[in-house]
Length: 90
Length: 159
Image (cartoon, rainbow over all chains, first blue to last red; front, top):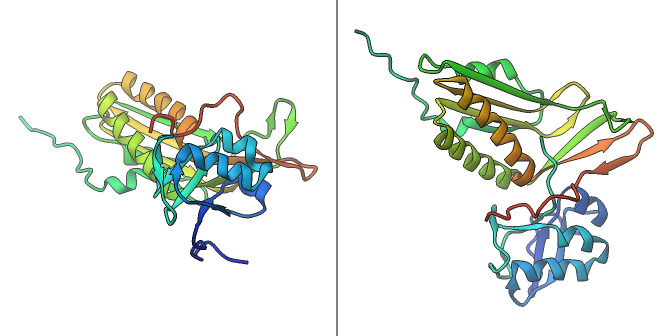
């Protein structure tokens, strides 16, 4: 067990989950193996780590340090990363 | 001749907010009032009790709060510049919202009504596309479902 403040283990990336993704995963954070890659790679890595998230991950935007990033943005272990599935506010 | 100075709006941080309780829409509208503004629009989005014939007991909103605030601030600034608004405030509620209660409110003011109306509509369209807020529809039978619209593009696609 860990909470959101526990640092991710070396070689892994902690990804924040929200809404339907958190409901499917049963938690608000998932750790995926990470030796480097882009925001687009992150979607695939999350889908591999937890296939039940694949459909929403494929339709998600990526945020790093509370900003949206483009698909080609590099992501390094330790980054503050979140997957943003299609939104439904309002 | 007397010159009337517009209200000082340096407290820009108050222009967008996420709240975990009821939205005070009257205060929001009053806050955008100004002697230089002749058009003041208040849009209030409320939780529907029925959607496509299915009853809703409540809605629960989740958000990536820092990103939602940053995105809302960006939209607020863009709306003020694009529509030459006198003032603009946006509030979204998070947590559980009952049918009839406000989940989002936008107040805009401009010298004339056309820009105030247009800005409120423009903002709602973008909030529904890019601001990381999600609703969960909770039915009377206990069923619940997070809404992730199938037709939507990936949020942040304009990043």
